[in-house]
Image (cartoon, rainbow, N blue to C red; front, side):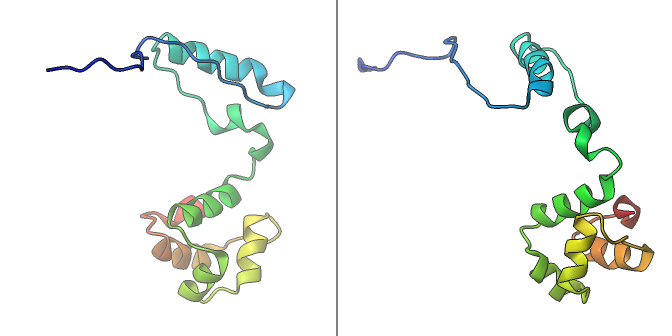
Length: 118
């Protein structure tokens, strides 16, 4: 037996979402929101959404994989033997990763192909 509740179902109810984004991203956010509402299949590249990271893919990838594994730079340094300040410099684009370090990092971060970090 169903009981009467005070809450109304919200399945078809629209809600207002307020975001603070940079002016240059407003059109992209609107386009994405319209695609979601229309239930369209539309994907965006990282470069479209975050043009400021273009050319910095390896640094972003290293930080993203580290965060995915829930590791701090210090923890990753302990796992790989790479000094923490070197990891910081790699993530900030001040130091290259290199093939040997990419292999160590890939093993510690459960990445199947170390070249994703190069």
